[in-house]
Length: 216
Image 1 (tube, rainbow, N blue to C red):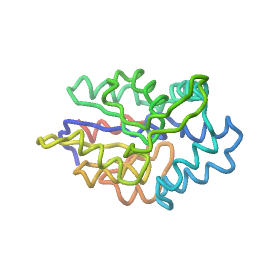
Image 2: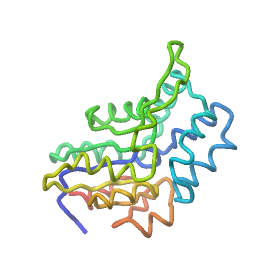
Image 3: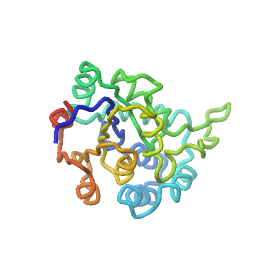
Image 4: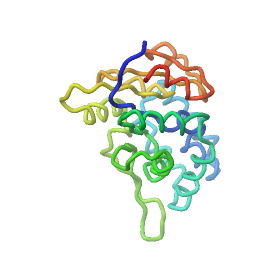
C-alpha cells in the first residue's frame, strides 16, 4: 500500500549495510563462535535484546580503533541502492533517520555517507578511556533493550500529525508499529520469518530501491 510518509527510519545493520557490525567486531576479536548465536537469537526474537547487549560487548571489549575499523566496513558493504533511495527521499523532502541498536560511533559514518544529519541518527553510545580502551556503553539508551525502537519513534514523531515508515530486517524493527509507524521488512540480506509475517509490507531484495515504490 503506497502512503505519503513524512519521516522514514532505516535500520542500519543488514538493511543499509550488509554487515552486522557487532558480529564483525566479534570476528576481529576472535569471539565470533560465542557471539553470533546471541545476535541471531535477538534478531529472531528468541532472546530479549537487554539479555545479550552487555554480554556481547564484554566479550568483544572493543577499542576505539576497532570501532573506526567497523565504521569503514559498514561503508564498504553498503546494500545495493541504499545511497540512491536515501538521496531520493531527501530530495522529495522526507525527513530520514537511522535507528539502530548498533554502536553510534560506527553508525555515524553511515549517516555521513548518506547526508543524514547527526541529530537524526539514533544508536547506542559507547565509551572509551584515555587510551582508547572500552569503558562501557550507555545503559540508559532505549535502543539497548526491547521496545526501544518504538520509544525513539514516538520521541521523533512527537504530538504532531506526521506519519512515518521504518525499513528493517529484525524483530526489533517490528516494535515501531507500536508507535504507529508503518513497518517495511527488508530481506535482501537476512530473511527472518517473523519479520515476513509481522511487517506491513516486505521487500525480498537484494536492492533497497524497491522501497521507493512503497514510500513515494
